[in-house]
Image 1: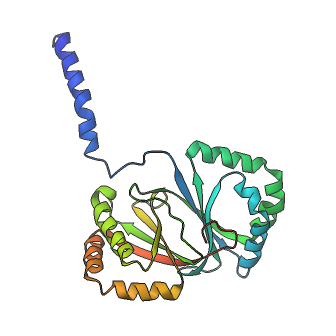
Image 2: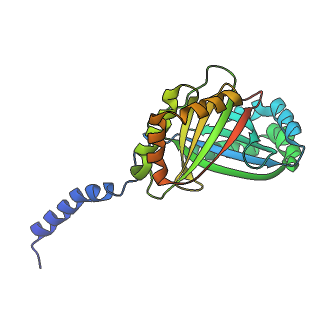
Image 3: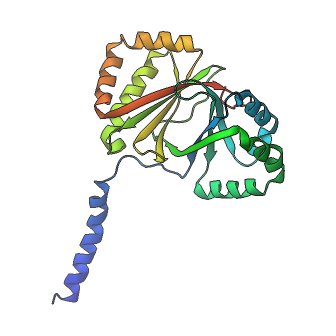
Length: 247
């Protein structure tokens, strides 16, 4: 049997080494706070999108009294039509839980909007995302259109593909034809997924900028490096609602 002093020494050594061993398995930089963004996507009954948005416009103040709305859009191109996409900001998970409880007890919200309009919704989906550490949420200078580009990356997290992905994003930003709003990494939902929200003056200005960027050797090189870690990608063109904070 080992002396007590030797047992304690081994225990202290193991405790000291443990963080070093665990850190090698980290998937990338961690958020410094608990703030996150909930992505919600509603597929609406055919021909009911305008009715749903008009009803929400009249009552959205009841919902935003509980938590911050970042943006609200209808989907113009990309995937299923008759769809709306919105982003909500929360300080942490306890904050979201408190908001959901308050909304359930808010009779005005329930009776004026939620109950009458639930029948217009065909399907609901959500994701919990964090802003990546190297990106802050930006507000565009004026009204425009938005593109949500979604990248399914290989397993391994930002420690594997983060640097290459960042270089590819910055290569497009440096071209100046588009404005980066935010880069979000999924925490709950399909994992190893990154959403990039872009702002453009118009769909035509985006198209022209994309064509020019494809001829830029710096963009081409950065994208070629990043696609080594890419599984799939898709995008949507989004039109902001009249009541959306992000126009």
